[in-house]
Length: 112
Image 1 (cartoon, one colour):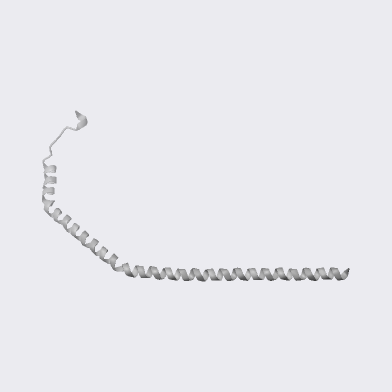
Image 2 (cartoon, rainbow, N blue to C red; image 1 turned 90 degrees about the horizontal axis):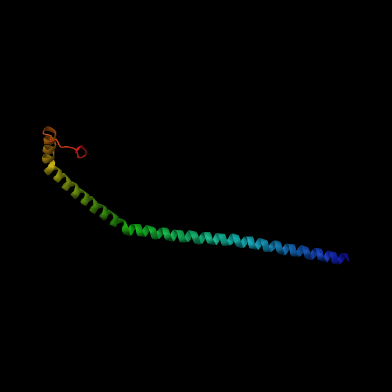
């Protein structure tokens, strides 16, 4: 009977070792999978960063030309505004001075 118990204990010990080996294997596989996934992520990230840099290089001149066109348009509009100011300045000053010196009294709407 003691040989049967020892046989069971030995079998149980072997089963525990097999389970421990399976756990170690699973742990190693998980670590390996994480490392592989991280390597893929890093490679994909490098690829996308390279694409972004190429895109920025291709379109860098486009932004500069748009900025130059916008600056030219702003300068033109500013020159137009200054010209209108110079043309109408005397008339506006005369109108303000006349309104101050020669007021024309009018009856308020609510006073009627």
